Structures are given as C-alpha cells and as structure tokens.
Image 1 (cartoon, rainbow, N blue to C red):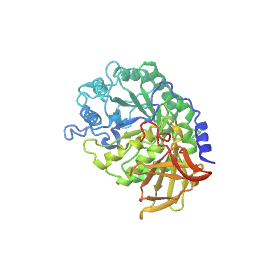
Image 2: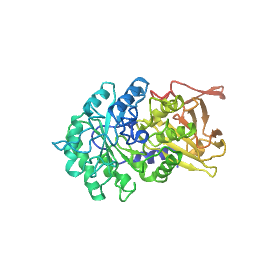
Image 3: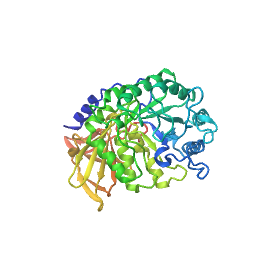
Image 4: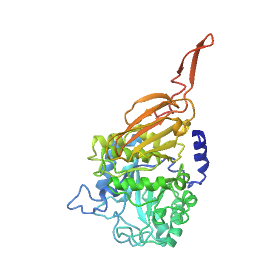
Length: 432
C-alpha cells in the first residue's frame, strides 16, 4: 500500500464518536505529580516535595515563568493522597487542611490566573489506590459537583478497589455527572487498564463516547525497561488502539519521565518522539524546579510538540521491524505532512540505517525532510538513499513535507534544471 492508501486507511479507521464536551481536540499537555512525587505526605520532614498546595504552586510557577505554557503545557494535575481520610458532614470529599490550607478552589484560581488548568484525582472504588476515600457509585454525583464547584478542569478517575461490574456502571455514570454540572471538565478514565486494555473486555467505541482520554496499560516507572514495555504493548496492539484515538479521545500510555533519574538523553528523546508519534498526552512527571537544561530542551522541542499536537489527530503506527533491531514509525499529519521515527533497540553502538522514502511507502516526487533534534533540513526524492545514524536506544525523527511542487526550466525543448518555490512549499503555520 502506498502513502496515500495508508493515510486513507488511517482516516477511514477513525470512526469512533468523541465525548461531546468540546475538550482536548489535541492531546492534553502539562504536569502530573504521581511518578515523581507519589504519595509523599511527610510535609514536616520534606516540605518541598510532599503532596501539598505548595508543590502544585511551585510547579505552576515554573510552567508560567519558564516558557512551558506558551508551548502548550497548561495542566497541573493532582494525583492520589490529596484528601482527608474522611468526608465532611455533607458527605463531600475534603482536602487535607494542613497540606492544602487554601483549599482546592484557591489552587484552581491560582492556576487560572496564570493561564493554567487544574486536574484532580478520584477513584471509583471504596478507596483510592493509596487508601483515601473513593468515589463509588453512590458518591459520583456529589463528587462531580464538588469538583465543578472547585472549578477543576480535569478529572482522572482511577479503578482501585472496584470490580468489573461497578466499572461498567461507574465510568459512564461519572461522564454523565461531569457533563451535568455545566462546567467543562475533561475526563480521564482508567477503565481499560483494569480490563487488560483490549477487546472484547474493552469497548473502545464506548470509551470514545464517554472519555477524553484513557489509560490502557500499567503505570510507568522511572526506568527504560518500563518505557520499552509500554512501547511494545502499544505498537503490538496498534491495529486496535490506533482507530480508537482522535480529536477529543486519546490513548494514554502514561507520563513523560524525561528529566527524572532513569533515562539517558538518547532514551529521553526516544520517549518524547514516540509519545508524539502515538498522539499521546504529554504529562510530565518530574521536578520542574531542578530539571536539567538537556531534558528541558527535549521537552520543549517545538517541532516534536507540533507533531504531537497535529490537528488531524491520527495516532501513528510502527511500519517496519528490521533484523538490525531498527524500527520505523510513521504518523500522517495535516496538510499531507508526516512524521517518521527511526528507533534503535541496539545496545552496542550507533547504527547507520539505510533506506529511502520509496521503501517507506512514499510516492514518487521530492520532499523536504527536517530532522527535529538536529534542526537540519534537506530536499530528497523518493529514491534518494537516506543514511540514518541512530544511537543505541535512541531515535532519529524526521518531519516530512508534502510532496514539493517542482518547476522545470527548459529551452528549445532541452531540460536545463529544476527548482521549487519555498512559498508554495511552506510548512503549515507554526511548524517551521
């Protein structure tokens, strides 16, 4: 199948109806507490890193002051361990007053004043995963209204201490309850992760109708092996997962751990690039107060972000697995652009992978290729041999233009040369 056929097949496969709340037309971006800060509630001995309003204010300040918001990182998301161990007299969840003295509404107002949004966490079981009060079926409506009253912008609804029957009722019920509040609240469902992530137990058509994003797989850990397991699972099941994604409904392979402790810089680029190919939510879980300049340059790479945020909203695919342990991934983008990632599973030395656009299903013609990490650009035709040096556990990522309009120059019937008009072949606004 040629490139046009692949694009048509990808678009045609996207038939799921999205949750009708108008939110998350592109994958959400921001910061999430869990992987880096877990359930650290020891504010007496570790005040800078405990789950408290101070931590979320610190991260909001960094997003606002260090150029993250302008790039699209606009969510600050609370995870587990924010509440007291009991509800108030009206049956409502309440934040721990020692760690959140201003309350959640104070925190959401702080975010909104800086162009940010606040996400919060709940669990449909009797308890949250860490033992705090859950939001079972009889508490769904009151909790949804409480979150709306607090002016929260997103809910992550987990599934610890629940069963399949309750999940089948609870996840749709929370979607309905959030919409009934009248406040636009994006909805992240953990439902498929608790049901193995695949049909027949998981109905992705239904998920697209009730959720904006969903966790398919287990929690990411701060290690390369964890990132690899997620990559393997997603792309081994891409025929099921790719059609489920689209504007307003996204597969969520979990947080970006770039800037933490477990990944090299090459591995960090690999996670960032492949999350962009997956049209995945980009929720960082790191310490923005101390993140290195190298990690920041990866997370703030404008081209990778623009690929991730492409308005067409089609999740990419793995198109080749080579015996050399090089894998090739492709994602169609708007305006007939596309993205390619060459990923090395090798652990020995840099490998020079040779290919051409024709071998990667591109049709005959000239294309402009931009390397998103080196910022180098060149024009090639479909048969040009591409020598792609990929570091062990690293990637090379190309942003590929639509086919260029070539103008031929001739005199007396004799071809003298060819050129392309940069204005006619300009990238979509905001890319280059």
